[in-house]
Length: 334
Image (spheres, rainbow, N blue to C red):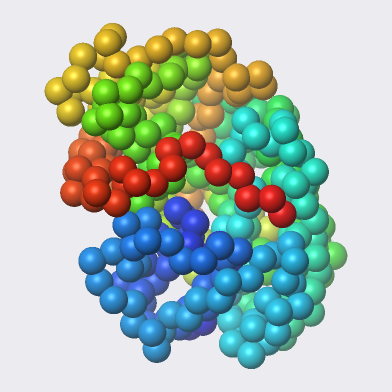
């Protein structure tokens, strides 16, 4: 694949994927996001370097409002591959505005894929999905697990996935799906638990732990997900789902926050506040990624503790910029 259209190219995972393509391939990239490009501190492909403008072009377009312009740009660029990172995330707020989550995560997917399936240039479509479609999982959930979504976010993502799966069956649409464990790494949105913890510790504020922080997650570095996404593009089988996760590495949110406290030399008990759990919060996401290891020749390379330290250092090194940014989720109305 020599030409990539990356939707949500300035999202956390989308920007890491663009950075991977620029650093490891000679591909040309068209990046599209509904928001303008952020400060370089949040864009790995701009952080400490200049983008090769001959290989990367960015357009600010919204998948909900600007589909015609997106298709026009795609027809001009003629990408071999479309990787769709665009999504309305933030589980908690999907309860407040569920129709907006369905607009982005389902209806925009239906409109987009129904249009691009008719383009003769497309060789691969990658749907970036989520393990939340399974609901709270047992240990080492495989890709054939039953779907039990428990939030509007999860239902909306699953709805989009299921539509794309019908296109695979009906038209042999060249789609593959990835579902990754909880992502982390430098450049992440500041309201996410890992950067948020480091920032709150610097500010002397207490970190809120819903349900005492006992929910369990496996964490995977965004650079590992970028490599896996590239592998899925080139080696994934049409119609298949691939889990992306470290092997046997479930951690409670509490333990992650405690580790960051240790790295920053702060007492855990004095740095946290325990509150009730979120309604509908899934207790555990545990994924078996053996299929990705076997078929995509992929395995995580990043060490978790080193990754945490990298985030802490990133916060410290960019404190002047980060300290001026909003620390809470900012909702963008569709």
